[in-house]
Image 1 (cartoon, one colour):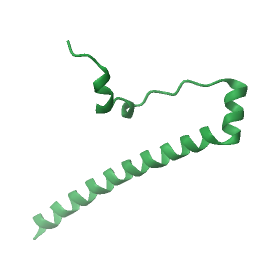
Image 2 (image 1 turned 120 degrees about the vertical axis):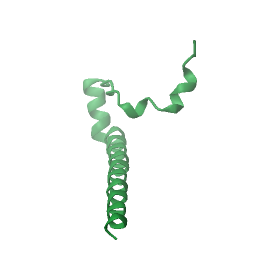
Image 3 (image 1 turned 30 degrees about the horizontal axis):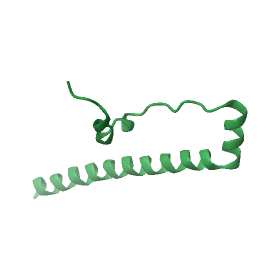
Image 4 (image 1 turned 180 degrees about the horizontal axis):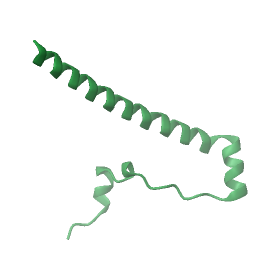
Length: 71
């Protein structure tokens, strides 16, 4: 009985962590796009220039692999 309940608990924790990570990605993307497209964001971009976006490990996904050449 305890082994079945323990397996369920581990799966629930893993799904919870994955869900939080996905929620983080969605919120972070929405906030970044919202700031960049707002009037204040456009004003700051004109005043201070465009700041280079920081590279994220999410930028190096499989979609970018087609642009690389294999040797």
